[in-house]
Length: 295
Image (tube, rainbow, N blue to C red; front, side):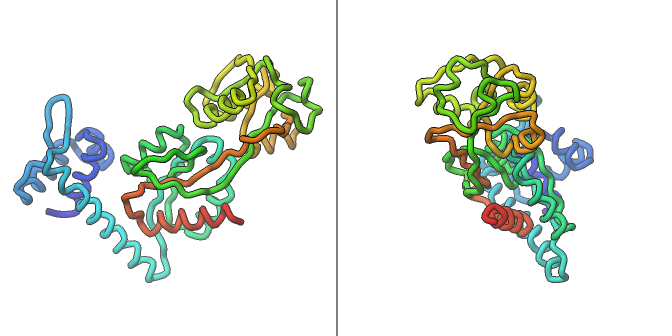
């Protein structure tokens, strides 16, 4: 039994595919099979049940998985601590954020963090909220950043910041000169909305419903950039997080209008797996990120 075998077993438990694990490790599929057979022989147990269609953990595989994860984490931390003792902090941090946060609210933090810790490799990707929760649970990422955090048994949500929902219009719209309005002003207005199921869309729908306001949804899109471009083109108006339109407001291509009602605050949280201890670089990243939000 060796660390390579344990690492491959851990990845197979996550991916449930010998083909994917082989590609991830740049080795052949038969080589992965050989490593797993040697591990099973050393333990005297079958860990994976494999057919032509599926790969699943056996009860014995499920039983040892948590210990395997802990062994791999401890080995990673030994390396990290050894390097840190020599004045070097290194490792990897996998982060996934929703577009409206990742593109507009953590750029300055990432620049400063990577400058302070050049040997920590940060991989950032943009995903929808549900994907971020799933990837945290499957340990495909270490850190997630989402809006309107949901309570889930295996997820720990750490408050990060709070944004404000605002109305945006094109510069020639009839409301463009307004500094603030009540929601009744946008009754039956052509509207650009986030896609259904997006937490910010759910919150906006609830806000409109609470005030008895109906809008004429002309277009939906999950990407904040595309949504803003549609408003710039005067296809309709939209309600978006304030931080996402600062550049356009400064350029004069969009107008940002305050909404005079309750319920416009949008909470943002950093999420991580509640039952897994993060590596030293991951914990450092989260600590610095939360401290950044308080400055």
